[in-house]
Amino acid sequence: MEQPHDLTVEAPRAWDRPVVSVPVLVCLSLVGGRFPSFSTEANLWTLGTGGVLIWIGLSNRVPRRPAPRGLGAGAAWWALPVVVFGVFEGATFVLAAGDEFPTFSRLADPLLEDRLVRSAAWLAWLSAFWGLVRR
Image 1 (cartoon, one colour):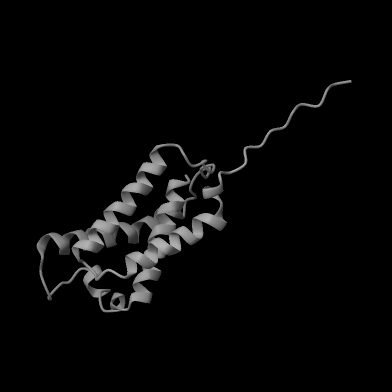
Image 2: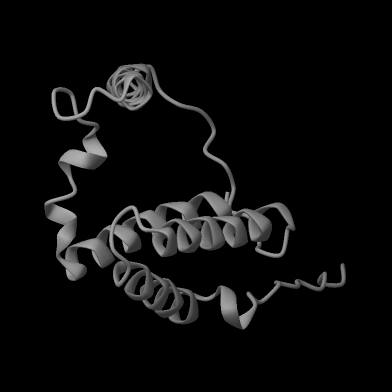
């Protein structure tokens, strides 16, 4: 009769659990939402939080989730609007056309004047970035 093999499962670190990471992301987004759009403070906060998340992702401190096996044929159709958006946003930013052809970020600025909406946008950005860190 065979002996049962020891099964070991790594427990996630305390800070990696959703009960810890979600409130941290909410607090970071609330702080980021307090800064005015396109201010020096907002830019530094964006670079700082983004840099820390990149460092966490590259340092292998967070357990990885398995990558998806592959993308279906319909994924290329979703990439088309993303590429068109990126080209349009980049061209209007580089050309600096001003009010004639504002960038989408300038068009969203009236929505982002409200601190709560800006904090919600920060939370969406941080959550998406955290999802990328976990891959």
